[in-house]
Length: 366
Image (cartoon, rainbow, N blue to C red; front, side, top):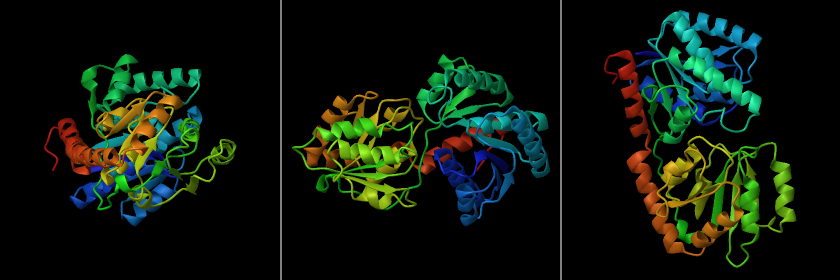
């Protein structure tokens, strides 16, 4: 099989890019021919080079919607894909899904779109939501299937009338295994792996922790972003500056997970976060906000807890339960690891993904 992956821009490394990187590497190792078509160069293409994954850098493909630039991106991508002649095109992110599916229809190549969370749900203006939703409805018939990374995303697509249920299939994110394991019963450290931007809700977590004075804790924040300076001042104002540790962006988050008591992802909106799966793989209890697919990863009360959006009282209550009971954290961590092994390994994900490939191409893909 010759497959082309299309991504928006190489300057960032998000969940969709890690997905494409890992799936591309696997398919190449299985003897398939792969090329990634991506806007520009950057951190993502550096990782592709490290893994010897071929890529084609596109000049005009970028994240913002721009009719003139998008027309140029379509023309550029059409020429590049026509020259490559793939059996299948797989698009990732909203912009790549739009441009890629239009081009795929033009060159008559089956084109899949994986929605790593719908951008018309949260995080953009009302006008932008209307535009993006209209684009998704327009592009939906141009590909044979849309892969959703969680059941919540599929339900959103149905509620928003993007297309019929038969057009959507759910393939949860999965991650390769790693040997690192935590001992959550022996630590009092909370770890957060997340960007510091409008999507994440560090403020609610800080407020909850500022009221926990009778139980020892430390918070490790792994990640960077435009709100870091604001957060650094906020923890000082809340009187918890000495307990909150800003580590910035890290290429290797495993040591932080391995030394933690629990993992927290308090957020405003989300798709199906890979960071939670990393923590489960390590054997950590999980605390997540109940938005979109976050809750699908955990077994409520057994591997972790979910809390309502912006509810610092609920966050405080669940943290108190977890921080005060080492045996519970140990038990929850074990269930997290078992759940990862049963549902969210890379092997589970790739098997389901190849099944979709086989259905679309009408032949078995090994």
